[in-house]
Each structure stands twice: as C-alpha cells, then as structure tokens.
Length: 402
Figure (cartoon, helix red, strand yellow):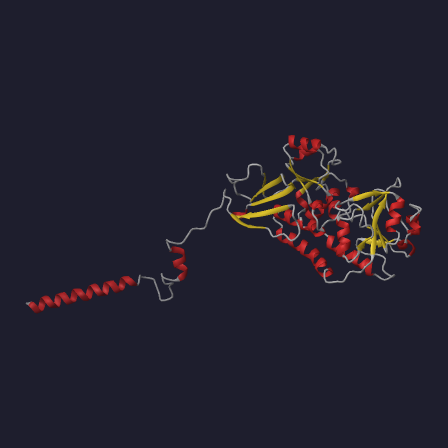
C-alpha cells in the first residue's frame, strides 16, 4: 500500500514539473524571439528611467552665444528652444527680446519688459540698409515686408528684386513713413537705425509696433558689425548661416594679422556738392579697417575718440594730408568723380597732393556703406590697394580714378 502511495506522489511531482516547463515557452514562440531582459527592453520598461523633460512655458538656462568682437548685443539660449536677446542702447537702456519657439507658450517668468517674438518671426519692418544686408546674407530676406528705402536707392540685387516683385514694400522715408501702410500690413516688429526720430517711434508704438535699434555702428571693431549677423541668425533660426557669414569675413582679418604693415599713409574724405570737405575721424571704423589692412591714417589728429567724419577747412586738410601716399575718396551725396581730372576740379588744393600726382586716388563703390556683411572683404581690398602694382585699377569695393 505504501508503495502505491509513493508512486502516485512521484507521478504528481513529474506532472507539475512538466507543466512548469511548458509555461516557460508559450505556444507560437521560437528560439529567435527577443529575450525580455535585453538592454533595449530594459530602457523602454525600466520604471526608474527619467521621462524626457517638458520645457514648454519654462525658462531653464542652457548657454550663451559666443561672441568674438561684438559688445552691444547678447543672446542666451534656454532649454526647449527659447532665446533671450538683448541690445544695449545705453548702460541704462537695454532692449530685450524673448524668442519663443513655434508651438511653445510664453513662459510665466519671462522678463516683464521683453518684446515677445513668436517663431517663425516674419512680416517685419527694417529701416536700415546694413541690417537688411545682414539679414539677406543669412538667407532670411523673406522675413522683411517693409522698408524705408525705395528700389532706386538699393545696390543689393536680392532687395531690388524683392521690391520689384512686390515681396517687399517701400513705405516712404524713415523720417516720415506711411503709417497707414504699416497698419494695413499688420507689422508688429521693426528694426531701425539709430537715426529713428522720437515722433516716428511714438507713432509706431501707438500702432503696436515694437522697435529695436541696431547699435552695430557703436562697436569698436569693424568685424563686430559683421558679427551682428549672429543676432539676426538667432531671431530667424539661421545661426549656422550667420556663423558662416562671420567666419568667412573673420578669415580675411586673421590672414592680414600675419602680414607686416606696409607703412603707406592714406587720407579718407569726401567733398559735398557745396564744396565742404569731410574727413574720417581718427577713431572711425574705416580708419580701423585701414590699420588692419596694413596702412596708416594720414590725419591721426582729426577727431580723436570719435567715429564718423569731421568738417575741415581745405587749407587745414591740405597741410595734414598733402603727403599721403594714397587717397580713398568716399562715394557720398556729393556724387563721385568720373575721372582723376574731375576729381582734381573739386578743389584747388587737390592737384598738389602727392597721391594725386602719383595717380594713387581710389574711390569707394556706391554699395560700400550699404553692405555690412563683407567688411572683411573690404579690409582685404584696402590691403590689395596698398600692395597693388600699376596694372591693378579695379577691386571689389574700390576702383582707381584715371
């Protein structure tokens, strides 16, 4: 009897063991099935894994934009694609822009005085030819709907085409723009040069148009003006393009920094249609371009500490610049001379200058002050002028008067 009970117990144990073995391999599974304990499965099922952070409506600082020369703007990047850009008008007056990624909400802790720009940022007004040139250079010209310069005043082909094809609209002079056209366009954001008048700004504010002033002209290094492309790159999501624009121009300056100074002196000036002479101030960015190019300014005592130009009497100018090796005559509202003889006729003192006698009078092209994205190229042109032989008479932004 005991033997039968033992046999029955053994049979039950064997049956349970067989059933457990079958349970480990479900019907339809084969040896190619992915084990449950693979790394991939663990990553998907691990209850301790942190979920991806949702940054919508939050400002979590990530990093700041690196700048080599520019001092009058900054860009901070935040998690989730948010950006805060600042333009320094004065130490006490800073324009702040909060750039909000598409389909993201405005953070509750955003700076209270910030201009909120929801991407994609489009349909803007730009009243500055240098700013327009930078926006065009980074491939974002289509964001500009309105301009205060008519088609005949432009030397940038892409801008002329946009105006001709009605993709951009001329709204009148920056001192008296057509406010009805601005309102009809629905534009709510604008970049102006520092020439913006208080009454125009007040009118724009009344229309709900937020205005930021381009302060690139305040920078102390010529290439800082090019670096402002990075600000526009951040606003219009064109950072890589902006970096390429700046790096291309910076390469010219890096190469010139390895070259010895030429020792050649240069006078830079223009004469108005009324016969008034204006020379570049000693600390103007054009003089700094000349220095980088390997030259020396022939009027180092004029306007020290100032940018722009200084009005000079003809005799005082002649005394200071008569022995200059070169002249760079600036295309201005007074027009340009078509030849060396036409240049000489502008003032009695000019034929007696050393540069004129030696035929070293060069003139800027009309787009010289309109295109800001190629300042490195312009500096290189000045160097080429200083080192060119007599057969060279035309460069990209300078040409010799004959």
